[in-house]
Length: 213
Image 1: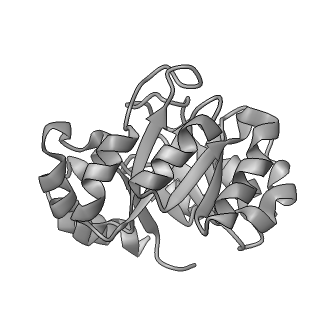
Image 2 (image 1 turned 30 degrees about the horizontal axis):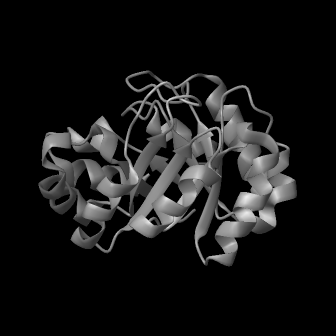
Image 3 (image 1 turned 180 degrees about the vertical axis):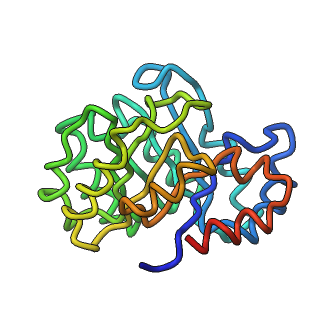
């Protein structure tokens, strides 16, 4: 397998000093992960388009927006205008997924679909030609600070088989020092680390270890 990719979640960064945090984390990040929610699909309100637009000039690192919204098209244009490079949609929005993926591809953007813990993974086959990323959630959507659900390892292995190495399989949620080697062994190409990276006592050493897995 190629080197493990770090899609670093800025939700765990110092939110009062995001510019300096981006400078600090940039050398160790393959992309920056922005959780965006509408307050309905996920019970939180996180990053929003104007903030993304302000941060975009600070770095050339890819911006990955996980758009946890019941009506993603209502927010999509604003995030694209703000500088999002990759948009991941929840499988759970159903019929809205395919047309939104097609729209993103027409705009030349990278795409992804996330799957909650109880969501079936079979749709990966149908959408694979439109997918760059498959995000397998290891915790409840929109909740941080939890350990990985034991089901996530089997689900990562299934996603790896279904993607046939044609999409990046990403583990999101429950990213801990003890869980990452298991997530990697199960089939993760990438992880979405939060506090594991953002709060690391030795950031360089932590990133080096993660990329060595």
